[in-house]
Amino acid sequence: MKTVAVAVLGGLLTLAGIALLVLPGPGFVLVAAGLAVLATRFSWARKPLDYAKDKAQEGVQEVAKSPWRAAGAVLAALVLIALGVLALLGVDLPFVNAFTAVVLILSGLFLVGTVLFARRQEKLEQARAHRPAGWRGTAGAYRAAPRGD
Image 1 (cartoon, helix red, strand yellow):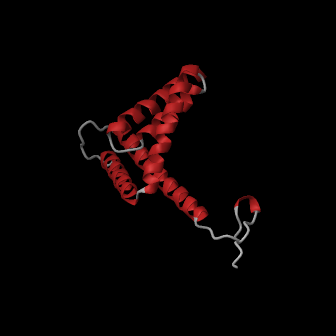
Image 2 (cartoon, rainbow, N blue to C red):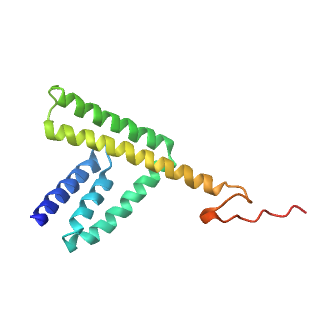
Image 3 (cartoon, rainbow, N blue to C red):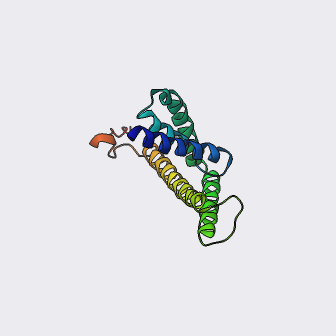
């Protein structure tokens, strides 16, 4: 029973991620999540999982470095959420039923979370890179301040 549940959940996440490769949303992130679920029971999923993780990380880094990409991703996420909410409220949208409406909303929320995470990580990296000498570094250590002769 566990294997069937893992196969269904992993398969749905992977398929949703594949769909989001061409639609606005975190495609490779969901593919990686689906393959990670599948890899818990199926050894064949480990190799594509490594590839998907690398692609997802590259996508997160691209969003983190570009405020325009981050803004575009958030805008796309808001559109996904709005479409899902409209469908749940009864607006007749083509190819959208209650299940796809929920998936749209979850994808939009996941995308917003991914963008916020990526932007926060980028700001932390920039702060670390621009920390002046003599300030507390990682692991509680202090860097030596350069001598002014």
